[in-house]
Amino acid sequence: MSARKQRLLKQHRRNKRVALGIVALFLLALLGGSFAHLLPWWLVPLAVIGVWVIHEAWFADHLFYAPHDDYRYDFPEACIRLPVEITSDALRLNGHELSADIQTLILECEVKAAFWGRLFDPYVVIRTDSGEDRQDFERGVKGRRYLNLSGFAEALREGNLQVRGRFCRVVGPATLYGFSNSDYASKRVMVIAPHADDAELAAFGLYSRCAETSIVTLTQGEIEAEHYERLGLSTAEAARLKGRLRMWDSLAVPLWGGVPMTHCVQLGYFCLQLPAMHAAPDQAFGSRDSGDMDIRPVRHFNPLRLPGDIDGQPSWNNLTADLVALIEHFQPDVMVFPHPQLDPHADHVQAAGAVEEAIRQSAWQPQTALLYANHLHDNDRWPMGPAGSGIALPPAIEPLPALPVWSPVLSTQTQIDKAMALGMQHDLLIPLPLKKRLRRLLQSVLTGRRWPATGEDEFFRKAVRRHELFFVKDLRREPIRD
Image (cartoon, rainbow, N blue to C red; front, side, top):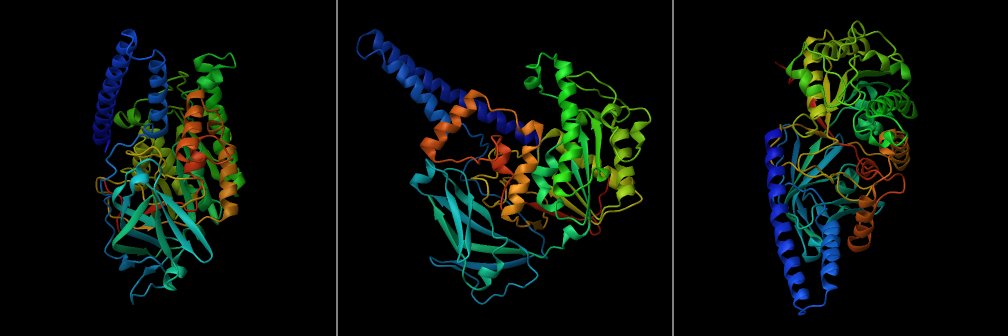
């Protein structure tokens, strides 16, 4: 996946250079015409502004695949598969029965953008008599996509569920996948957050209704602290301040979701150093920005003593030993951590690897892994569309492991509480730069995009949704191996 990401980035940059070359030739032609008095001089600055506006409104998204590429998902044989007819008035099961124990519903279909779907975000409206949902896709979409119909099972059974495209068409043949999920919220759950805020972004709705939750944050998240240098601090001082603030966030914010600080642990390893730690497990890797080499200063609020507290070394061996101790202490039935094939962030990939290694070494064996993605390889806008709408399955251009899906529905009140939890995270409160503000203004006026009133950071739009989304791995049937 990492090699593919680099290939996509290289291709994206090459295409951008070609486009910039064409634009430069166009502007040079205008400039030459103005010098020769064939064209008025003011056309040149007007053209420059026009090109910039067009880029910001329609070409600023990072989309590292073609909109006509099919998404590729395989699901286990045990899941329900039903053919569905898409009509103008409703989805039809045509005599097939949908059992009462199905909670998560995914509709595989083809979505084709209309002409206006190349200029405006195409989306699908899922409507019943009691309410509706909206799920957005790429401009110019033309391929296989996966709508999330979770929460609409009853309307589907009654033949009262409509699926209609806006700036696009939804066409068949379509297949409905149904998944029967356990009540994971009733079990002991441990959420692994590579950084402060990852637990809230991925799983606030889940952990806020769990009977018993523990939250383990792996890193301080201290890098990229330029915002705090405005206080007159050096780079190292700003990084230490940011690390302390995010340490506090990781321990205090879960209390808003009902998780006491006695069930929250900050391990204090350093941001973006997990790959190096994994490559040399015995070696210590300090902070890139603060220069600190000791993880203990941010651990003094932890509810228990851990193996890494002995020497304070930021090493892979200490990280896995800490995780083993925490798994054996809290004894979770369900582990929630990043999807190692879907989420490309280096710390997220290594966090998944550290958890899997710790499970192999632990005397306590969790039953289930719930895998999430807060970042994507291919599309920096996913989940696409406005806050409060549903979460369709993410782009998967290369096949992923065949896993069941669990997508619990969040009430309006839970969505508000989740937004407020994000609003307590210092890293999501940094004001947007002027360029991004102008981009949003242009996209709002020209393309109709909307951002929530709860916060400026893009995660207030992407994470506060009708659904949360997890891929389910049964550790009893598919134990983690070396």
